Length: 336
Ligand code: KG4
Ligand code: ZN
Image (tube, rainbow, N blue to C red):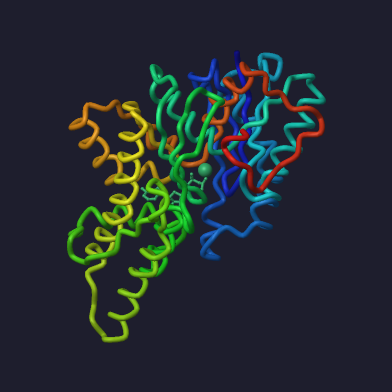
């Protein structure tokens, strides 16, 4: 089954053709990041306008690169939640129009479920059940994936998402948006033990995260040193901060795995590209005898191939949208 998938939840307009949830026939991404960088973050109104301009050429290219026409497509899929509402609406309305014009069924797909599904492309043998750490710019969840479309959140962030914390710390160090990737790169040359940063714990919920105190601690460290005229080693600050975030993520994730007797672990979302997170989990899972699955780095960020992958399983479970499909800025991964 060939699905033409569309993604426009944030600042990437993307389209892909995916076969049977696992095989990517094409994947096109038009990123707006250079423009948003001028403002230090995503400007929702600009994002919507750029999606509206890019969506037709991006969808056409994805068909062209797959060597297909709409006649070869069996279903359409679109990200309908969560994300920037104006941005989502561009994709949803375009997909609804295309569905009406072609008669193809339209599969509504949840953005975070799609991030998880990026793993089905990179790891063809992976099947639920598994425990997934979903870490992106907007969310940090530990999710029990009982089946492809049956999920339960058992841990979540109480404040900032991991990606958001990386981006804000990076910004304080003068790195341009989104700074998480650059912080990760600079951290490779630093000493993770140079600065002691807190490891916030949420006492009544052992799998929950809290990153805002950690973010404030690193911002205070930088500002206090600047006031005293002390120059900090940037690589050491990056390495210490990255170590603290990854330590919190890995500690809770492994605790959740142990308590729930889950030995198959998966990571997903933009932050799953983080080098230290990938290395630490690889080492820990080897020691514990757990299976670990990660998406290829090229599939960690927003793309439409992952939408096409999840959509296949949504379709199999009977999830088809009517012409009243709407977009939602927030919606739980459990509701799908
Ligand atoms: O999943 P994603 O592409 O978009 C959302 O759905 O939010 O995640 C983007 C986030 C950004 O905060 C970005 O800085 C972060 O993922 N990110 C990283 C790395 N690569 C991307 N954070 C830490 N280390 C990385 N290597
Ligand atoms: Zn995302």
